[in-house]
Image (cartoon, rainbow, N blue to C red):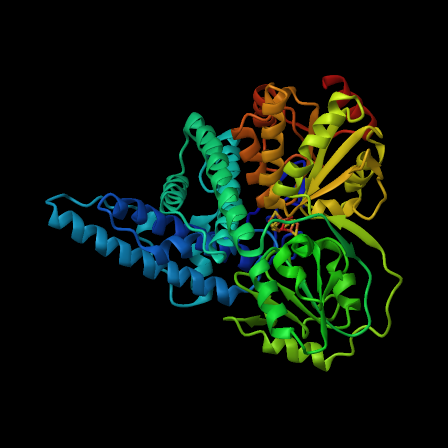
Length: 552
Ligand code: FS2
Ligand code: SF4
């Protein structure tokens, strides 16, 4: 195996990456290899999707399948070898379907079809052990190329993986776009060619960022059309007596189905992790049995799910080994999420989850409530903008910090808590993603009625934060980089990589990321990104804060 896609990758003086029998996330070598083989197959599908499109042949099922299956290879999503094998076989079937359509169209038009080698031809072996023997050809670090080229390839691969995840989230909410799918296939196919052209790879990385900006817009449209615009909302974060279901991950459509199916059944529903922002959407407020948020970010799930006395549903990333906390019999996976031995809910029927919740004891008593305020996505931010601008003009608000992204369990991540606590009192903090749990239960007060901590939403709601920055840039008639705004992103997995690429592709400079640089970025690449974009890794709170305030 070789995997270097997330922040917790193994780092040694000999090189970075998980490459032994198991990754730091618990992913076995077999699972990692099958994921690589799946990606290889998907690149073949995309290559033929590109060729078929030359004749106007668009297969909507393929446009759905490829990003969705790619999402299954993202960190902490799918650890189930059988499901991965199934996706790979489906990919081969789709590739052959497209190949036939393409060849037929070529013949009908008197053209000689192009033969796509490697990913376009490989046939999967009959058994999993034999497939694993095929896997080395698909390793992400295949080929003997300069480490900078490899770093750029991986930046693109992992960035596109993040975009694929958001495409699938958008699709679930009926948001698809044939041009976005076409561009996605082009990039996927290009990455299958193992380019050694640094300029082209760098341009592709920026292209992935631009593509993802559009995808995040689609996702924003899907969420706000289905559920309304988030509004500032006070949320209880403590347990409430009664039977219970905990819903984690990003997929609010699943939350809606669960709420509909639990109505009147005496079950309280709680959000967890990245599902917290759902509580701010008007569509969910009509469900009185959606009672609040329980727990924190993904890395604490083995303690939090173990003590949650009900059923748990993982609608998307991030799942980790449920056997450690001994709750594998009451956790359920959905969509692309998978863990061997864990019940996977297909279709729209959550009765297995409901039955499990009814069978379990539930919370025995109410805890003393503790409330937090959430819901400052695009519309709420724009509504607050005039007051914010007035306070900037009269000197009450001097600086904005965006401190958000992914959470994780490394001790160094206390940096983000310390930073949030240390920013001057005349600053506002925007936050998003599961990284917010590092400080979202602390009290930050307000500035003339504007809360100092503004929770924008999930990681993909970076789109809302970008809209605010663009609006402020227009109001103050300046470049986005001249706003008194500092971005400090905690990264963990590939969604964060693509959000970063999006910000860079929009020309946002001087972003800090932490707690460490991606393991696939070489010193040369890091230097190029610093020179071109002012991108740097976090150091210590005092020095970073001083530098950010001086630059303002
Ligand atoms: Fe957190 Fe995990 Fe949001 Fe990431 S729950 S690290 O998926 O996408 O953020
Ligand atoms: Fe290692 Fe992260 Fe890959 Fe898991 S996802 S194998 S921890 S790099």
